[in-house]
Image (cartoon, helix red, strand yellow):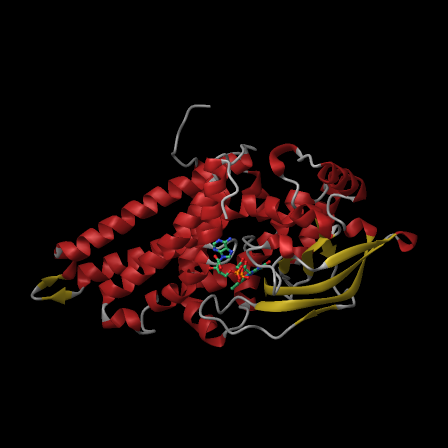
Length: 406
Ligand SMILES: Cc1cc2nc3c(=O)[nH]c(=O)nc-3n(C[C@H](O)[C@H](O)[C@H](O)COP(=O)(O)OP(=O)(O)OC[C@H]3O[C@@H](n4cnc5c(N)ncnc54)[C@H](O)[C@@H]3O)c2cc1C
């Protein structure tokens, strides 16, 4: 196929469709749900009604052979608002976990339950982090033990900072089945709706993404049927045997959480890019309207150059995200940590762009009368979750040097 960066008709339609929803529904509702600090169920329902929230739309996004449709949708949605965006897209991280480890039967059974239906939409949660294991995923203490007599897995532990934790219909839980193997001894499990022993803690009050529910999740001898192990027991046993022998599985994708992050990092980068672009566009327009010293402030190089730099970064960042997404979709190995590069650059840009936007707006930018204040609060998480900026640098440094950088 000839090389082209031009979007095809389907991708352009997708961009315009999601942008329309973000502009007409999401952006106008953003301040309200940020203040309320509640999951915006009516917006989720509206997205489900038009087919933007659900299995089919996500399957279409994942199905694009270029890999970039998912990123186009994320950029536009999060351009609308990151808190509502995360309330809508948090589910897809759990779904990505099912996609990356599950069998086709497991996909067919569980992914629709992650979303519910348009009259009664549901959300899902991807549970990896723990109080003692955030960046250091290998330090995970949640254990899953196989009860052979009943063909059930018994999961116990505590998960921390979980998006949709406790309010999710389906929780995808990463647990250690062989602690001696570190992250290579981990597996992903479905905890079906209503399973006894799983409890969500109180919603955590946060700086930003306040429309998105974040909470700890407690798992106390949670019993799930054998078929809830994603990928199945045979595959897990073979993988553990290989890990015990000290060999790696093809592509190094032996870790249940890590293989999900590989795919999801460019996606999270696209969300950060959406915030960065929203702040930049708002500041650009404001700088054209606002006058000081008898001329629009954009006619000062200090302002215009700052905006020029932001636009340059936005364009560069998008290319990095698209490259990493294309690589992930086409099974190319991230030989220089390209997934991490895209998330690192976009996360840092979201913070820089929103901060600069506030500066361009002056006092107005510091107030809640303008959305850049909320964007600034929302942006900061993008240097923290899905791997902090330091961890992304670690991944890139290890990939380019081939050394165990610490
Ligand atoms: C709003 C929100 C939503 C989240 N949603 C989810 C979710 O849905 N599912 C989920 O599983 N998790 C989720 N998380 C958790 C998130 O992924 C973790 O917070 C993140 O991975 C960082 O872990 P930590 O908070 O334990 O920080 P720590 O790991 O304690 O890190 C603290 C600091 O030390 C630095 N650091 C640590 N190790 C190194 C090193 N080797 N080299 C250099 N610096 C280092 C870090 O970069 C960071 O600056 C969420 C978090 C938040 C805040």
